[in-house]
Length: 245
Image 1 (cartoon, rainbow, N blue to C red):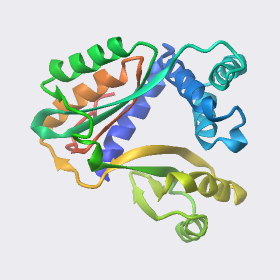
Image 2: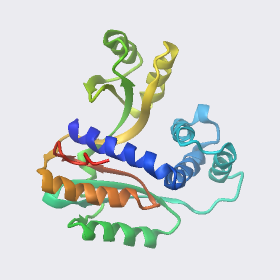
Image 3: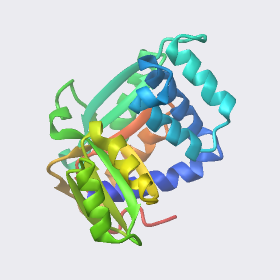
């Protein structure tokens, strides 16, 4: 849990800093475009609905969102965007999973390979670490709400577990039930901090301060690449990692 939330907190802080430079928009536009391939209506397309939530959180203009949906759904000009997942290892053998969306496979492969080698990791083969991760839905809610009411609501909506971590409740659900959980919370006026589909490793590898910083350097470098959508790891970062603002 701690390792996952440590990277999530660092990534969310980076996202706020990057928003002014347009990096978040670049990633979200690609996400909307790819998600819209399965249909332009958010009510019928959960993946698109989540992408639009990210767009709204990043204050993306409606015209930009509309163009991205049109490109993906085939009603506008569409460049060929490919989804590629890379698997590799960081220092101390930790697993790193990188999800990308790109219109130039060769460029992306070169960038990812460089990111691994630059910081002491190495790119693996397909399937080398992917089996360590499971896709889950995660909903974060402020811990100012009543825990009993919150627990009852999310379990009835199909959630699998709820824990408290770093000033917030974390609700775990299957990706299929993520929308039903957020809708159930909204129905009783409980606001979610964030809801997303992510990858979680069942087993984490504990790292000391030095190894934690090395792995974090890889993940930060990856996260800054335009083609990279998400970066996941099974690293359990030390408490001192990423404490600088």
